[in-house]
Image (cartoon, rainbow, N blue to C red):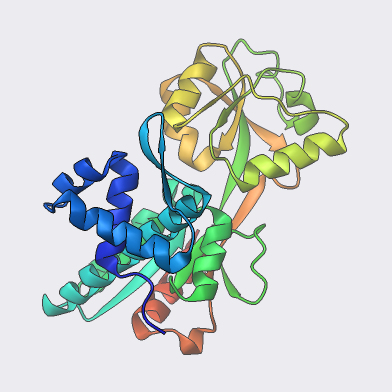
Length: 300
């Protein structure tokens, strides 16, 4: 069976979707518009379904086009990483490891731990990719990442989990807040007050929704913001409380003179793990990094 698409065609298709115009995509890729149009037409003919339609904002992908666009970006990203990795070997790199990590892991100790590993192994290369927790698991299962770092609440059946570090979700409020004087606060206590959340909270957000439902309540945030800094500024302004990891928020909490209180909930202490396939099947570089990260857990 002949190949359906090639990397050049995928790149052109992504360009058309991003530019909303075949002419602009052709100019971006230094080609004539007819060549781009011909390649897109050939894919549509092979698939037997339209991929692009003309909409109010120019050319837009159809549902099938959206599916191809998503996969094309992943394929092109993988090709880019492959090229960078192979070029690294030409420059003296003797091994490389791809690590898929959750947002929380990257916001805390993981970058420093990897930096320490690289300082001790200068001939190795480690790439860190931020991924939602479920995608971390998928990447390790499919082999697109040798290691994954995520909260151990994620469903990682079939993978080996090496204990890593842990963090603690705590309540953050301004000093004037009614809960600021409590030594400990239950999750139920927080539901009586407006809250602020980080967009894309993922697994934490789903667990909080579940816990609220078990209490017969609804979790409704006054607003969602995209960064820790913005979240804490809103808390400081008195517009809502936040539940965040103490380890990543402590410095800014102190700088803004906010109050942090332990959250009395069984899920408030998060244990992170390094996910992998069987250690014996890992490349040497990945096995060394796995041992290093496991050692950091014992030191903490």
